[in-house]
Amino acid sequence: MIQNYRITLLPGDGIGPEIMAVTVDVLKVVGKKFDIQFDFQEALIGGAAIDATGEPLPEATLKTCRGSDAVLLAAIGGYKWDSLPSDKRPEAGLLGLRAGLELFANLRPAKIIPQLIDASTLKKEVVEGVDIMVVRELTGGIYFGKPKGIFDTETGEKRGINTMAYTEAEIERIGKVAFDAARKRGGKLCSVDKANVLDVSQLWRNKITKLAEEYQDVELSHLYVDNAAMQLLRAPKQFDTIVTGNLFGDILSDAAAMLTGSIGMLPSASLGANAPGVFEPVHGSAPDIAGQDKANPLAQILSAAMMLRYGLNQGDAADYIEKSVFQVLQAGFRTGDIMSEGMNQVGCQAMGEALIQALEN
Ligand SMILES: NC(=O)c1ccc[n+]([C@@H]2O[C@H](COP(=O)([O-])OP(=O)(O)OC[C@H]3O[C@@H](n4cnc5c(N)ncnc54)[C@H](O)[C@@H]3O)[C@@H](O)[C@H]2O)c1
Ligand SMILES: CC(C)[C@H](C(=O)O)[C@@H](O)C(=O)O
Ligand SMILES: [Mg+2]
Image (tube, rainbow, N blue to C red; front, side, top):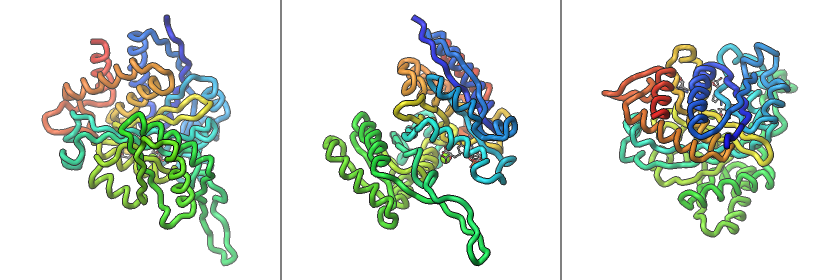
C-alpha cells in the first residue's frame, strides 16, 4: 500500500534552494522504491520571506507547517539582512518556527563516516569510530529568556541584554529525551553546563542528577562547557550522548561537526511532543558559496533521512539513503568541503546525480 505524506519544504536562503532541489529529487526516487508518495508544498521563511512579505516567518508558513506530516528546512540568513533588528532578521523566522511548533529537542548526531576520515582536520586515531549524539534544548535558554533587548541607560549609553533561563519542567523534558537516547545508544550521558558560574546551570545540573535516579542503567557524567569543548577535540571517543542547553548545544554541535570532516555532512532533527518535526542541516546558508553549485548537499539529504526515520517512521527508507551516501563516498565523489587527494571533486548537482544513480542500482 502506498503511504502518503504531506511535506513542507522551506528552502530559505543562500545555498538553501540548491541543496533542497537535490534533496527533493533524491526523495522522489526513494519514494518510488519504498511506495511512499510525498506531497511537497513549498513555503517561505527567512530572508526570502522578508523580501516577499516583510516578515521572516509569515503566518501562512506556520500554518502550512502545522498541517503537514514533517517539515524539511534548508537554511536561512545572509549578509543582505544582517543589519536588521533581531526580531526582524531571518534567524527570528527560524526561532519562531521552533517556538511555534514547540520543538524543544534537537538531535544532532556526529558520526564518523569511514570514507571521510581523511577529511577531518584531526588525526585519524583521534576521530576513528567517533559516534556522538548531541541533544540540544531548542526552545529555551538564552535564545528565548526575558528580559531581552537593547535599552538606553541613564548615562545615555546603550545596554544589551539577553537572559539565560530554564524552568525545572524544561530541563526535565529535554533530560528525558537525552536519557532515552543514551539508553538506546552506548548507555552514557554527559550533561554539559556552566554550573560553576551560572545559577541556571546549577538548577540544570541538580535536575539532571535527580532524573538519573530513573535511569540507573545510564551512566551520567557532568562537564563544564569550556572543558567539554576542549575534550571534544582532545578525545572525542569518550562521548556517547551529550545533553545541553540551547546556546552551548549550538556551539558544541558545530565543533562536533569538524570531527566528521565538514559541517556540510551534519543533519539534525528538531522534535516536539505534538507538532510535526523540522529536519534541517546543522550548517547555515553559506552565503560565501551560494549560487555557485559548490555546496555539499549531504547534510540536507541526511536530514531527509532523519525525517524518514524520526518523523515518518520509515526507517528502511532512511537506512537506504544513508547506505547510498556511503556508496557515493566510497566511489570517490567529493564536494569541495570534503575533498581530499585522489578523489573526484563534484558540485552540488553532480553529487545529487551520483547519489540518485546509487539509489537506483
Ligand atoms: N539553521 C540555519 O538555517 C542556520 C544555521 C547556522 C547559520 N545560519 C545563518 O547562515 C548564515 C551564515 O552563517 P555562517 O557563515 O556563520 O555559517 P554557515 O554554516 O552558513 O557557514 C560556515 C562555513 O561552512 C561552509 N559551509 C556550510 N554549509 C556548507 C555546505 N553544505 N557545503 C559546503 N560548505 C558549507 C560555508 O561555506 C562557510 O565557510 C548566517 O546568516 C547565519 O545566521 C543559519
Ligand atoms: C541560525 C541560528 C538561529 C541557528 C541557532 O543558533 O540555533 C543555527 O546556528 C543553528 O545551529 O541551527
Ligand atoms: Mg548553529
